[in-house]
Image 1 (tube, one colour):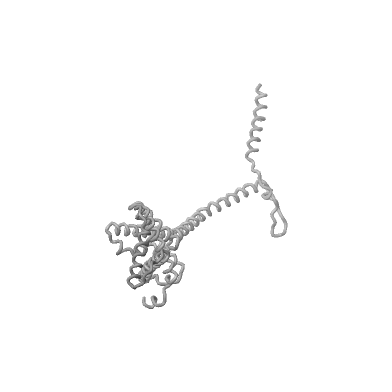
Image 2 (cartoon, helix red, strand yellow):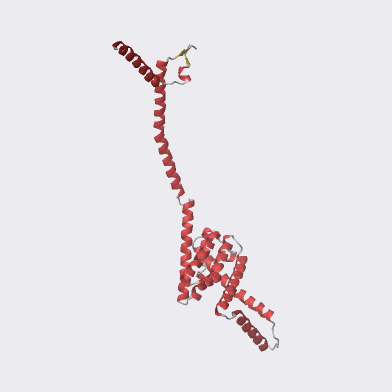
Length: 298
């Protein structure tokens, strides 16, 4: 039994030792055992006992280089991100310009809506009517046609909330569309005469639409009353001149439209003069297309 124990234990111990040694062996790539050239043109081969530590040393050196380069690259990436973020929020950046445009449009809409509301409440609308379209024109001149349209819509929505839809429609038809049209024509560098004529048409259409809405709300045809009064006035003028003629209704409609366009044209022309002087004082003369006589006078 003792002999069996003596023979068994060394054999079992030898198998364990071979098994552990087999797991500890490092499989080297084929390049680690390849031949290396010398200065004489000959080559030599490294034995596994020398190639194994050499391979581990080179692998550790590569890992140390990679670990040393990682913090530098991270610092560079952080610096680049900070620079890009600062450029992104600069005064000439896209985000800053969009934020400034949004804030200015909101302020213009608030000022215009509150001015119209206070003027109606204090019954001084006739004295400040020339300034109601100014915020929309200024917003269009500074930030473009889309900004002017947003300012007009925002002012109308604000007035709907504060004073109801009737006042909001009155502002939109009489002042909002006029300010948007004037700002759009000035932004696109349209000639002075064309701008005055087109804005007069826009103002006349808005006035007619306002009269139609008022007629529907009160249940009375205001346009018919206006044309009847015009017909009586023309008949009285002709009879006073010794002309006994009854004018037709088409002639009355023509006179009514001509007087409406004349009234709107005078109002729009005065607005053009006032706003041209105002924008010139603000330093925006280069963005305006003024007639020569007005430019020389300013």
